[in-house]
Amino acid sequence: MPKLSDAVRTGKLVGNLQAQECPSRDILKHVTGRWAVLTLIALQGRTIRFAALRRTIGGVSDRMLTQTLQTLEADGFVHRQAFKVVPPHVEYSLTPMGEEVAQHVRVLADWIEDNTGAILSTRKEIAAE
Image (cartoon, rainbow, N blue to C red):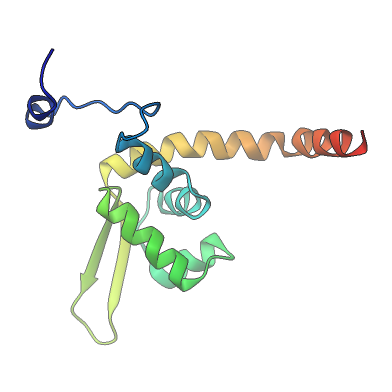
């Protein structure tokens, strides 16, 4: 059985979400949080400035969007491009890995949107029991 250090060094480390201490759980939390999902979807296939991104998402505070972008950038999903101009101009886009994960969370988001009516009906039925 190879050592963990060998797996890390060779790039063959695979996550195990069921293992309590696996770092893949943090990554899962980062990409499946409400603001992360909405941010990834909003950035899909385009480059956008912070204020436009905030308007696209709707309801997210500056602080939460900043934290979300920083986390997604640290994980390698978001690229931040700062231009040295006054006033500051910063643009955000997805990295290739970010585009890939955005496709996956979009499938989940689309499923939720398509099934919202059925889910709400089920909630009513259960609440009425």
